[in-house]
Image (tube, rainbow, N blue to C red; front, side, top):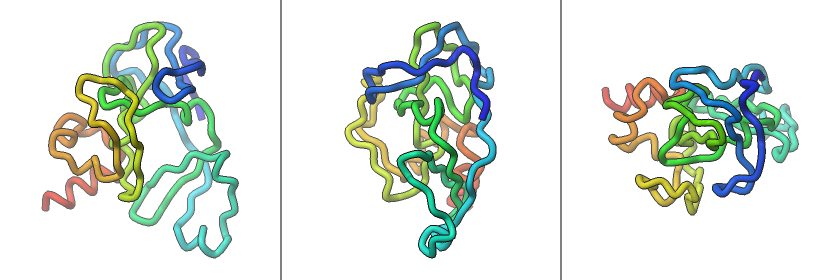
Length: 161
């Protein structure tokens, strides 16, 4: 994993701990690269082929039944906001020094059972909570077009067919 040197972790009003910028960051700048990790299926997990302590890993869904677990780091402390300033590891808009780095979990979370309630982002467009089905909201599909993970972009294309 690589993280921009302008990011630090400290106390957050959103979820207790968050990632913040120490310098201005311009829209379109890459803030992190996350590569590597442990790739597995639900069958791998069920049969014990993969044995991880979940509290030490962050899980991302890559395909319908393919997941990647990466050790918790700065990436784990990127909090959800309904008005994010980072999507798909890039600054989605200009970020001022001292701003908390946030993302909309709907841009990468497609597990239907996922719930984040209540949402604490306090954005004017706050949805009040977030589910693994939020990527299906037409307004979000239009707003985040080309900023969803490749998996969710494909789900959107397939749903429109």
